[in-house]
Image 1: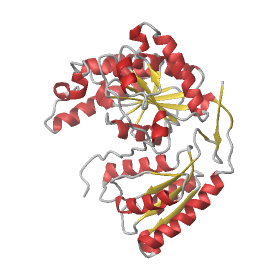
Image 2: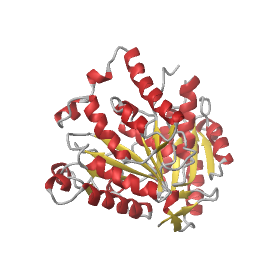
Image 3: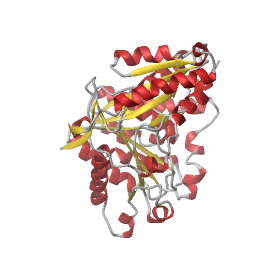
Image 4: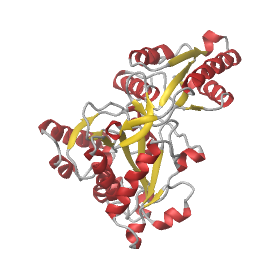
Amino acid sequence: MKFFGYRRSNGRAGTRNHVLVFPTIVCASTVAQMISGRVAGTVCAIHGCGCGHVGEDKEQVIRTMVGFTGHPNVAGVLLVGNGCELITPDVIAGELVKDGQRVEATSIQEAGGTSKCVEEGIRLAEKLLAEASSLERESIDISELILGLECGGSDAFSGLTANPALGVASDLLVAEGGTVIFTETTEMLGAEQILAKRAGDAEVERDIYEKISAAEAKAKSMGMDIRGSQPSPGNIEGGLTTIEEKSLGCIRKGGSTTIVQVVNYAEKPSKKGLVIMDGTALDVQSNIGLIASGAQVIAFTTGRGTPVGTPSVPVIKVSTNSDTYERMKENIDINAGVIIDGKGTIQSVGKQIFGELREVASGKVTKAEILGHREFDIPTLGPVL
């Protein structure tokens, strides 16, 4: 089975052909936006990181930036720095060059201020764009696809319609030799035993228990009991009552195949198949972690409705109920509410999602892309000093 994507010089396959303008420090965000705004066809990602990070937090932020900017959906990246920060363009560019990514860089201080940096950035971005425009889609085996899974604004229907249907699509991709990554560790609380039974080996089983236990312990260390404070107010209004109930619905996105690996946030899997990424339950941060881990497409289920997209990877939205779909048609690609309405089944909607995955991977534009949703955020693990 095939899709039509972009083959990169390092051998990896992309579903989009973006030129990305990326500030390595929050201080360069406005300049990066100015450059991207004047070079039609580029995309820009704005964040609040880049300085004051230490230890494990610094490692995670750099890993996320490298994974995101070096992603196969990015034909070339322009890094924009200030000049005196912790994470300069050189820090990221060095890793990108090793991986074969096309990269250019500029710095506000070295260029001589905002205006000069913008002008230099425009020149470099236009150069990258010209190179990217010469590339064409080609037939690529679907086994090279990595699908990221996310759910946000969950409701009582999430575990009955959209999530199990997405699980069917996940199983279909894994059966074709592809990879599926699901995350949101705090939304696995109460479902540890179920996930552990699906572990491919003892190491994966141990990792599942350790990551979920660590997420709960971290919350308790700050005086919070997740099992008492979750679900969120929106989840409760949507009909969910406990974190365990939410978790049992959440994990159904991953289908029924063996879990082959557990990776850290923004870490690339070394195995194909179903993978857990240890990460936050915050939608935007989850999406970015999935991208940095290599996902070329994201499937996102929602009960309450959510508009978010990403700067570089298409996000397929699947509603859990028909009311949300009708109210937010401009944001949602597939309506799994037909399962409750008696007009579809979990299997039929799952196959529909899988078909949509192939079409989007081959260039079909999602609702989030049409509307220009490009949300971006990186989680931090501790205080910024």
